[in-house]
Amino acid sequence: MLSVLRQLYLITWGRKMAKIPVTVYTKSSCVQCDMTKKQFDKLGVQFTEVNLEENLDKLEEFKSRGLMAAPIVTTDIKEWSGFRLDKINGLARHISSMERNG
Image (cartoon, rainbow, N blue to C red; front, side, top):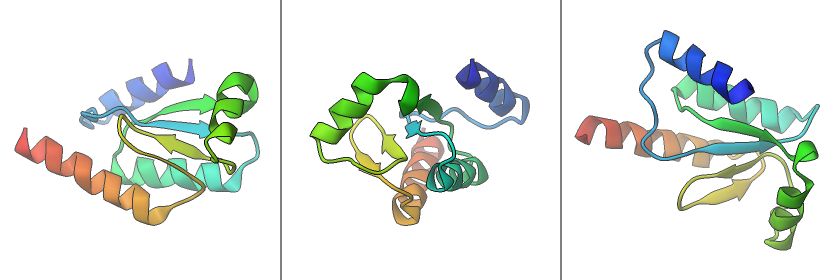
């Protein structure tokens, strides 16, 4: 439901949809998760949010790959854990470049 509301919000404000899927896996009461989502919103990056507390299989999958800190951000080719401003900004630049170059 949240992702549908987020999509409506993004369409309402005229943001373009990302050409690559971005998913932010979060936990409740997670400051780094909130900071990551706010930064993506600020930069106009559309993402889908998935709560790891409701997806324990996914949580175990990430742990087995060494991703131990929330949030965990995934795209079609990259993934990282924790609040990583450098990676967030780099992804936003990449998406913006893709949109400009069509």
